[in-house]
Image (tube, rainbow, N blue to C red; front, side, top):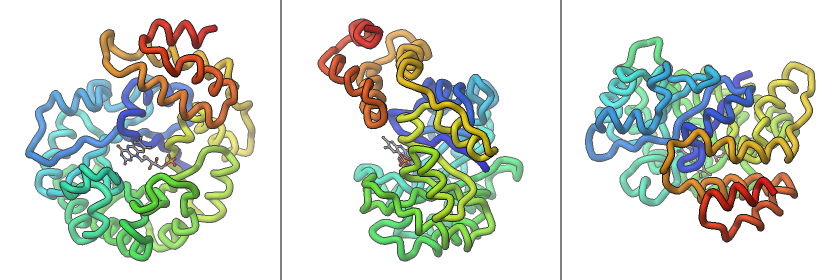
Length: 311
Ligand SMILES: Cc1cc2nc3c(=O)[nH]c(=O)nc-3n(C[C@H](O)[C@H](O)[C@H](O)COP(=O)(O)O)c2cc1C
């Protein structure tokens, strides 16, 4: 069983990857997407996006980091993947799932689900450009409007040379609405020889048990669930080995919030919003987080937020 931490733009950045992989249970994590639309990017963009490149592409706890690229130009993505590897990337993931209108207008992300031949061209072009020991993976949704072509698309990605495929069990039209359609993962998993990683709405051990039973998938990627319950990967790992670990409770989770802030460089902008966003997800699971959220909601500076959280 492999457990991956999902890419989440604006939420799971390098400090969050460090914190969550430090709690344990993850085999790998994926960066937020790096968008390539108007030509090659300078080295500093890669380092800013994935500071772990300077540490052998691993988080502080040693968990491998996979660099995710997004775009629609096979050649540009291939040379960019090569550049990323020269800078220290050890694995490349390709984004075929982002639903953002802005990204889709430029024909990136989920828009490519309407053009499976182009998706396949992107995967094979990146695969050919990289040494064999660098894994190339893809992350897709079930389709753009409907899941009808999901199996064909997944097969095309496999034929193009992907080493594994993550499937977010929703179409673009589904957005992020629950429930994820785990039943669609089974025919994909049965059709493919490469590992299929199940993703979408796996927020507890019980969710994973049901998703695993429904889909037959052995591997999982955790997104919002990883933020709602920061030790979820550790719990899944224990469940898989037939043991149980006591779930982390609010008094311990609460200390993670100020701890996360220590991983940011002084003067980093937007940290109050990030903290509120995380607390917004935590409150879906922990009643105490709801109370804390109400307390900090209108506060605007980090010192008063941290004082309120400590109280
Ligand atoms: C705020 C946000 C940002 C996301 N950013 C990315 C991204 O950069 N790349 C990507 O492949 N998926 C991205 N996703 C999708 C997640 O990786 C994941 O597929 C999705 O949230 C479903 O999993 P979940 O139900 O476990 O959260 C994002 C999702 C959210 C909610």
